[in-house]
Length: 137
Length: 137
Length: 137
Length: 137
Image (cartoon, rainbow over all chains, first blue to last red; front, top):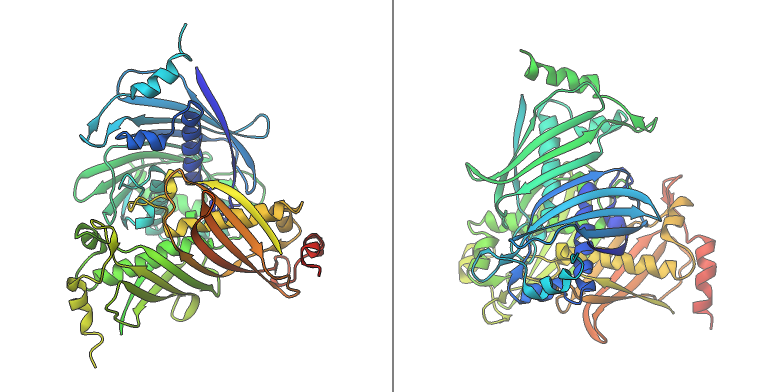
């Protein structure tokens, strides 16, 4: 299974008056996790968009277990449990502080979208080829 | 069942380069929906915080059906399907454009948190008293 | 001089752990002030964009005098001191809490930008015509 | 003169439908620039807050010269032209793309604020001592 990890520093702008990260501000962290996971494969999401593929988020399910705080150095772990052949892709993501303090778990479902023809499409082969080796038996 | 509706205008700041509202920017809309629902009962979330009660979000589950766009006037419908007696409260929320175009559905679970004693608590009676009449048989 | 005022409620998402509105979160308030000022003239910024005119911000100068707080109902006052005939437009904006507590002052300079030809342009006549009456001697 | 540089990757969340970074989203970049500049001296802004000092922004003056775009790797250069002995500190900051493409210039003025006594204070000596060597003749 393809798994990747990236680090993110919490900004002051992302805290709220409870003294913790606002629940809506985790979504850019999760986005960075997915983007850096794709980059680690030798592509970039920016390139996908230039190829006419965008990836809108269609569903999120998140559990907030412990609050992230200002200046925390977070680890965002991004996994792709399954390699699908249709228009959907679902990432499982976890955010940790330090070695093993789990702060948040998320499932994020996206579509592959053909921006020129305004319709669903499937994962571009350039990305599929890079991912396949992680799922061979 | 207690249900309330509030209107929100989409800001330019909330769009992204797909030309739609970024998925993470719906969370402040949902927050406003809950806050205005409480205000409609004659209290305010700000007052709850002054009483030593905060309400951290512990779980969200959202489906994005159609994109909201810049300058859209959205309707956020906020319902409380169940009046619980423990430390949890779960809102069901829907965002519409115009009369009946459903854009997004969300379930948002929060805890009642005693900020002085740093522990879970239950819904303050001032709020419970205002809600009870919506759930009498 | 054309002046317009609009109201904005501070969201929890916009506070930071100092317990006040984060300085960067005033910019969407100022944006709403300008957008509602234009709407009050019978046009909308969304329509301007559909006509091929966008208005990028090129300079801001802001003084933060007193902090805005969660749930404050702010008044954003937007003025246009001068009606220019070139590609620039500069708004003077002030944010108040209650009747007369001034929280922030801003000067925001924008360009009129022709999105099709990728070059500066001037204020569209539809907007100019609506503004002229405020500047006649 | 003390100068420091840090890198920031533009997130999708920070773009708007003009296809560029929204003008208000540069403020967290500038914040990170200042925070990493202080960290490079062997302190952290988080530590300052624990010592009872916060640093509210009281004035910003920014010129946007060229737009930053999604996935750009930006360089934020942060300088402190002058070491003052009063309650004020003013940073000069510039944001570049690549080696020398200047996108934005900012002057950001902050106060040193004693959070316990709710009054202005001066730069803590721990920070002053670290900075002095950059300003010796």
